[in-house]
Image (cartoon, rainbow, N blue to C red; front, side):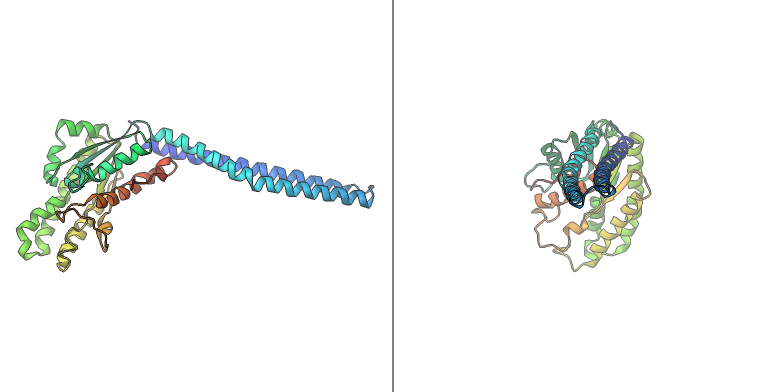
Length: 319
């Protein structure tokens, strides 16, 4: 397994190579122009030649300058930079492609419930994307429908989950929606902020324990916490408290993630808000395939940010 240090090294090497290529191209251009100017100057210095000879020499020198400028500014600059950038990409990609492993843990959103294609939701879409682009990235899915933070914390003790995390470069987490639903079921006829605020404190404590446990299993892995969307917006949009609860829990998770160098928060609420697209499954709670595709695209955006010099930067989720 390659840790984050190797990934940043690939970026650094890529930048150095690209900078060196641009420097050499500019040097070649400057040298060509210097030689052309010398040709003109040598004509001017020859005061013993006739006016006609000098005019002919100047015209020839000017033609050489124009030709040199065209050669430098057109074909070599365009083609050479493309070639050099391609070399940088290949070098960086060699680092990125070695033994990369993504482990997804969490609830039904990780399992892919609601995906009518039954291909594993956003996790399955990511896996297919990597395969289609010939990226050497393996993906393992340990999502389980109904899991709350307390249940996920216990599952991290299981040998199969713990073993997978020990070998993971990246851990993706969706968790907490069932914590919210647990409170909502008990207070649906009288939704107020207070019981959700009380449970949010416990949610953050358990989420912090999850981050700590994953870090104990693998100090080198990068964790991505995927935020909540509001599945009630379409049919219960008039209950403003529901949106406020989602926002409050999202902000709590985001704030906790920002306390760790190895944890990043990925928002998803905006993907499902104020849209005419049908993004929910028949249960009106989980995403459908289209919704999961949007989630996969968002996750991919965050996964590729630390690796902007690699080919993953041009990868698109299949339509």
